[in-house]
Image (tube, rainbow, N blue to C red; front, side):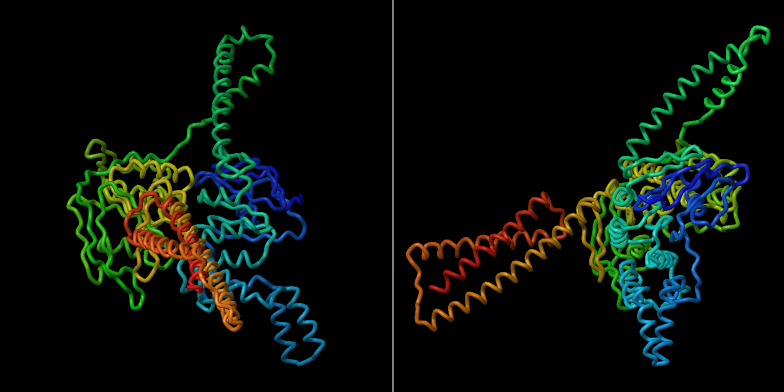
Length: 631
């Protein structure tokens, strides 16, 4: 297997803060590597160093001669004056040159020039480039190739940049949080594409299903060094815990040995006279090794919700549209105490509008929201922090409250103390908000929401920019949260672990209430799609056989060969008539239950029964048609 890239003894610091030191690993042809670490430990920096965008302090990066690398930044910087199509093609000189040469050749009309230009178009695969571009952007939710980039949202610009990287056909793709701002269908498409693509991949993502299904190797940055695991995310979790346990046991041994050696070192110098110098050197080495801190500093989400009563909210005949675009159409729902619901749907279908309607941020066209008196919303907006970027972290929180009282008055914190629960050390609290990383901004925003002790959390894409460890802590917090929650998220793992059921916004104001998590919904949807394909195939086969039978019947009639039912066939015909009526009735009952919008018990068993009935119906109908010809 060819080596694409070799990283040797790479070290990077910011001032006196070491991000990573003496990092060594290789990227081979076909590798699919996920890079995992807590926020602020250097994931993005390492990617930028490898991509040649950021300098490093020491070490060496050696790439195979002619290696083509594609890099997707976490926040791409695209020229706002160019169109989507121009951005995607601007760094593809082969395609640009081929198209330009072909247009010039056509203008001259010279046969030889056109022939040479045609060869260039073939070599650059330029003939269908626009079709491939349109297809990929459509998969990523971008429809207008001629739209100026300056008119796109941040999420749309990220998707354009992603399409550009893939279309450039690099041999090594480096992706920094590629799933941020993608809806679930786009994530599933990208997941499938990268799993099949014959490219090497190095990426940072917090999407655990994505890591599991795409990656065959995990690299973790921890304690300023890296640890490599040959396997997917699930394998990494097991092996990481084994590593931590082993390091803990080794550290315990080192500290026990250090205590003994400390006693020897504490003796009077004359008592140590003549002792080997190596023992003294070994003591200082032990002391250094014993100083390693294996304790993990994690976000502390011990803030409890305030009391919430039995009445939460009731939506009565809610309708909302913008021009011809319908968001909700006569929506009705009674929300229960402690209920946790996820909201999914394609980008632009109105997920964020839905929760803004609930809170009264956007007025509905008709209908009412009847909200309980004890409900206290905590809203985490995907648009991010509405703080002055030139304020310090501590000042932003102090402006909200100088005395933070949570857990029904049993816990009281100063702003500085509260921020430390969200991993903002006193020096970190003096940072300007404009200088925070994406993960730090998310933690600050989460702190500002929870400090108010809400009992109804409304979280719009809370997983963006949070590291995997913090996501796990947030999941545990929400699972035990004594309140209600509505969560919009593209993180399928997150939804599966938290929600009781899902609102699927299908467009045109249609909201489907599905019991269970996202994976349950996806499996049900796939089964429905497969059943639909099977049904179409059966109907086509039935039509074919009917045509064939009609032709055969006509042949029989033309030959004056009348066919009559035998006694046995007559009894079969009568029996089939009764059986078909019974099957049709049962199918009608199941379809009514599926379309009711209510929670369905034993849905998998009923889905299988429905499929079996449809197949039985097709088989018996064909036989009934055969016999009916003789009646």
